[in-house]
Amino acid sequence: MRAIIAIDADSTKVGISFLNYDDGSLLYSDVITSSLSGFDRTYDLFKQFLTLMKSHMMIYKFCGCIFEDYGFYHVQRIANMKAELIGMMKYFLRAKNIPMFYYIGTQYKKKKKYTYECACAPTQLKQFIYGTGRAPKEGKSSKLMLEVFKLTGYEFENDDLADSYMLALVYYVYLYCAENRIKDYKKYQKKPATFVNKDNKTVELKLSAEKFKPIDKWLKGQG
Image (cartoon, rainbow, N blue to C red; front, top):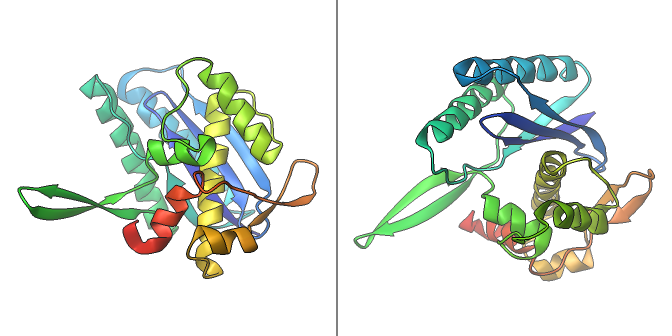
């Protein structure tokens, strides 16, 4: 069975979901945590990730992985810990020849164009979930769960599970569009992706034009 991986990693925990590449069904979803601190915690999270991956690689053939990109941190040490953790995970995935999603970002400085690799930006994931790049200030957790439930019918215990699942889903839709040569929202409307929901029923994944924007950007070569 082919599967895709979605990883929402932080300095203290890792939300991870596996999605069936062929029908969009949720295969696995969990949050990895550790009671340790400092680099001991980073290493513990990575070891748990390795154990999880090695056990599931005997069941699934992983054909791709997507990370939620780095957010902005006020404390540099926290940012460094997250970068170290994601770097180790990427090393393992590269060693196992598991492709990782990225798009080419652009930036202009003094009229010079610079390009760089990006994963799925936090604002892009929010756009896919809410239809806007900003999460609500109040009731963020309950609003997230509600949006996920309305779109997919799934109910999750916490934000981390919901985030990693939606990250997997945005990657699933992107791969579906790329494979079926769907290059814009109008074509997607005519032939939307389908996925198997929690009731084991195949349903269409209907998206608004606003929620489709990150995928549209990636498909048009801007990502």
